[in-house]
Length: 562
Image (cartoon, rainbow, N blue to C red; front, side, top):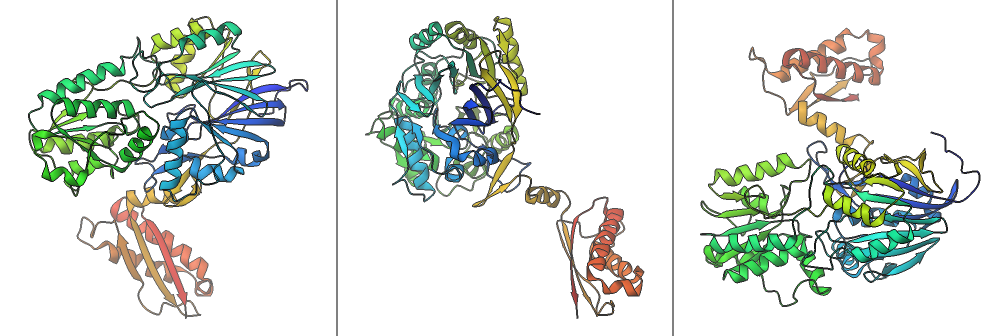
């Protein structure tokens, strides 16, 4: 798409590189200036997590090739809060952008420091500007104001971004909750004020736009957890998002009220507790046991607070469910409370953990059984309230999959918003001057953190792993003379294939015979070309195994000429 001209004048544009059309991997750009000469403000830099479709990949990040080309024009990186899908990509991606300044509130800044330390990265010279809640900064041509919101982590912020052309509001993740139990509730007064001053565009969270009503309060969850833990007959394990400091505090208080000892299981929990205590969101004297103390405590006097609410295979709860945790074990009649919701895409992983627990007669409680979890995102009733307060001219739904974005867009239209822009990752939206419209697109994609190596999702190694998981691999070793004759029978190694076909013939024999037959079928003069022989044998072996087995394995051929 060629960019649409603004007749040479300045413009304010919005470009999502991740987070629009998906849940997770949030990275948003605001650009101010003339076409082709924008100064950029980055809002958030998050990750998403690999699943069955990405074997061997734990972390997925947005492709920032566009930003790398523009790195000399970046004014700064502003973080709305410290959830992994909003700040988790910084250690990998931020160094690629020329050490641009980072702006964050105290809790988010502390979480970032701890993350850098965990990854053995220096924080000594980190250009980190700690902004107080409600604070303002001038970042390049952008006058930025943080506005307190409620969410499932301390210090979530909306961002009012003002340029000479006007103001837009980026909500970050939010909900309405008068009792969020950690930081201040959503600042209705300030939102109404900026609404009266004039908001050109609202770029807003869509995660729960398909759900009617208003989300319950975090305080209600705290009451229910206390009641459940008080009446539990045996050991209780609670799993939740490690970053939900309010929930961690509620579980700790419930354990204390029931006369139970609190055991923490999972490294991520320790990091969040450390940050929350350092910034005043958890009691610095909160007492808990390391997981190694579990076996020494009476089971009916313990609450184990565990990572792994999303079924992560290496998290504490999955290891407990499979009997592989070195310190914690549960038995029949114990309870596991899933104080969480299953993020789309994690359903199978969560079901595996829950089924493993059920197989051992462990009782499972979820938000289908009691109010043990509330979302940190706005339902339709909350969206309506925000639109009423802010009264934007333009709505741009973000942070959601396609159905969430469309439900949000239709709601905004029903509320009489003048323009609703249906953006996706990579679209460049001109917000000001109005009318708003999509004017261009930029390259987007995904990066994989594969071990400690950052690679493009297009590089192919994950695709090869999927093939291996489906049909295994056969390796063929050929030794040829300079005249193209076989010195000996080919050596065959099979991995991930059945041993024999339905007639009892070993598949390795089928592969060996196919390799020999292929070589002998090639005219002698042409056998002197090792590359030709190698490719012909690869194709012949795959075809023969496909005929015998019904699948085409990955086939590698090593040809040596003596």
